[in-house]
Amino acid sequence: MVQRNPNMAKLRAGYLFPEIGRRRRAVVEQNPNAKIISLGIGDTTEPLAPNITSGLVKACQGMGSLEGYSGYGAEQGMADLREKIAEVLYGGIVKPEEVYVSDGAKCDTGRLQVLFGKEATVAVQDPSYPVYVDGSVILGQTGGYNEEAGQFDGIEYMRCDASNDFFPDLANLKRTDLIYFCSPNNPTGAVSTKEQLKELVEFAKKNQSILIFDAAYSAYIEDPDLPRSIFEIEGAREVALEINSFSKMAGFTGVRLGWTVVPQELQFEDGTPVSKDWNRIVTTLFNGASNIVQKGGLACLSEEGYREVQEMIQYYKTNAGIIKKALTEIGLEVYGGENSPYCWARMKGKGSWEAFEEILTQAFVVTTPGAGFGPGGEGFVRFSSFGHRADVEEAVERLRKHLG
Ligand code: PLP
Image (cartoon, helix red, strand yellow):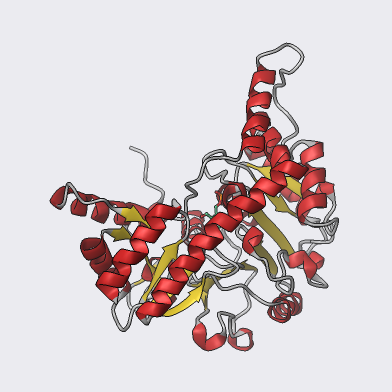
């Protein structure tokens, strides 16, 4: 018999969302006529915009003709898409050859973990997107789960909450090889300022660490003073790489397209450029994003497509505003929801799962318990703005009734 990978056994009971799904099904079984509304999982709900759809359709039809057919492409992505990403989304502060197109930010996170290997030490924001921790556990970067501490041994949890303006206390942080940092943050909706990111870059430089900057929600930043990319910060090119995605920007959660920027200056201790090894990982373990989908990405970054992208983002941001207003009026302490699709609410002394269960069983609204994002999320619930407007409006009316 084959021995199970012992790291798999170290993972905590499932991933957060299967547990939410299980509880939701239980409520549906007991209340078969109830209309459940989800403000839970961060999955987009609105149809693709017309120009973007038409870009995908044309690419697909092209594949059915002799002239339009293409097979394997460059693993790093189509040259014109890499150029467009560098130009439209970064205003030229990164080079096209530093952009590696992928099938999404989650997949790139996994490949980055393979790139850095199991010996690399890791710090994560607490709370944070669960994939950074779970991926590190699977790879063997942690000893195991420490029940008492409510966290994995061997990972540095950087507490980010209202008391520190959602920015870690770097003066008391142990050095690690890698620092995962997500802004706008999932789940708190907090967006780091230029000054905060400068501090982070200086900290990474001083400690010779590498920042894995997750900018999957950068398109939601409207405030011109807030950085959309870590590369807006001086010195970041020597210490950071950035993952990003079309998922929340253009509704591509099911279409699948993302990218990672690895600057040429980023090096390992022995002087090897990180991009050299990243290129090797990408060419070995990945065969490139779908050529049809990459054309869809190009459509998103065309003049008309990019206008549609902005409209889609405004739609979800309006939802976020509706949710934030209602939660505030209910009297909850609410964060995020402005340059981000997520609202993060403290549930008046209730535990996260208790508050989740109460909202689910009384208001028939699915949310996400903050504790699922790390011990720092206990006592909070995340409300996602990804939903149809009418559902969001109905959900907030129910919340006003049951929580108000
Ligand atoms: N990073 C963060 C912070 C996310 O919240 C998500 C998805 O929810 C991802 C990455 C994954 O994005 P993708 O759909 O590109 O895999």
